[in-house]
Length: 390
Picture 1 (cartoon, rainbow, N blue to C red):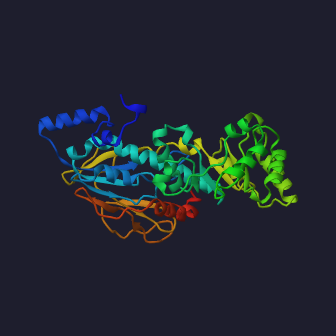
Picture 2: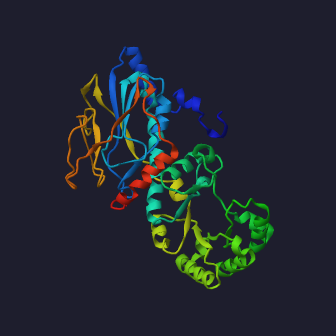
Picture 3: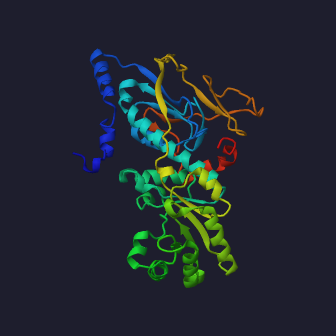
């Protein structure tokens, strides 16, 4: 039995994470001597209400999975916006060389794109304020690093899981848990110990909702740490919360009139885009958990659209290999069977740009893959335009 219920990389490469009907499909095709060259296209049919747009990620995993296989891969770049019916990925090759991986391919991009998109929406809602990914404890630990990686790519400014440091190349963020305060027995004494023993490069952010009123707890800690205190975090449980914005406004006032303008206010606990929007004018940073880690996945489908170079597909699907086009001004998208076709955006009267690129040829990756920070920068640069869709 697999330890911790985890499929290892070799299990994925061996096709063990596929749906069983693909194994039966493969058996039938091999015994019948059928192995046609197909084009399989990935697109999303219908966007859910909470996702008027999507951010495409997970391509690097697909390329890694199919590297060395005799297939060609075309896709939009990771970090690109997509809308309903945009062909985000197309794979060309003999079916038996890659068909068994359909489940894994969709799993890679559906999950990653869902997390990235939700993180982007949270960053938009925060109106430029800091957003940290704090949702690892709401998911299986085997994918905690993946969640934080794609949350960071989507716009989160930091993350909490140590393993994600290896994937992102940056240090994890975190303050103090209630467990430490409860064992010390006092919030102010806990922060004194934290300040004494923890490296000075780590921000001193006090968790102020464990025992006493948030305002008085904040003032006690501020008086004790003075300029060493960087901020306070409100994680007040829902049963005691009341109006979190008014609590924050009261704390901000009391800090400022006592000369603690440098102390920032952070909030966490059950936050979503709506709450971030409501609090963004008073809160300086947010720790967002379940909303991102349990984000709705993108419901991509993967369908044959060509067989032996000829357009052919099931009903309800547009046949033929397609190239995606996007307006650089408003991000409106369309697609066409022609490469580098001149298409003018009906909204902006601007020439649309073809965004489909060839990433793999006969199993060899032919384009340099962007770094985590390069993908993140691409996404952040699009956030202004995405406000029209949020």
